[in-house]
Length: 205
Image (cartoon, rainbow, N blue to C red):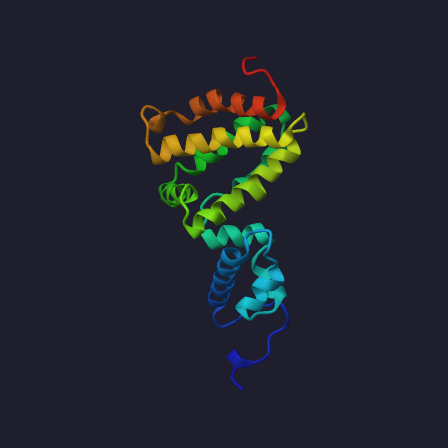
């Protein structure tokens, strides 16, 4: 029996080609999301479709959001960044969100992939449905929990509309002078708007 064919312990990646196993899981996840939508997918179903032990899915991915992000090739994970931003001072949440997104998309590779995903999100393409699922289930869900004022879902949606508007205007339509505006200028101008939608903090201090 060859070393590559020996039985592995549960949850351990293949010793000979771990990337192949991970890719198979990502492909299976993409198919599951396309067939059943975000809410209808479980990690166990992804493992079954990929033909691997469910523990192996957990080895590579923390949860369903990680699987979805991998399936669409998301270059930036604002949902994860929110954990750190929300752990800081509440009055800095709006500014922190804007600064994170604009700083991450200053990287050429992140920006190119991000633009492709933004374009797909406003189309009927299958990947567009997955992008919208990540935004609605993870980003909006977390913003809703922090917007502890009346109508939290509306507040989260309004905050997200500012972020999405910035992404489309700056990176897809490339509207000037917005496209080349300084990061901290954008933070100073848009951060308070997002802050207001979430918490009713004054726009001008």
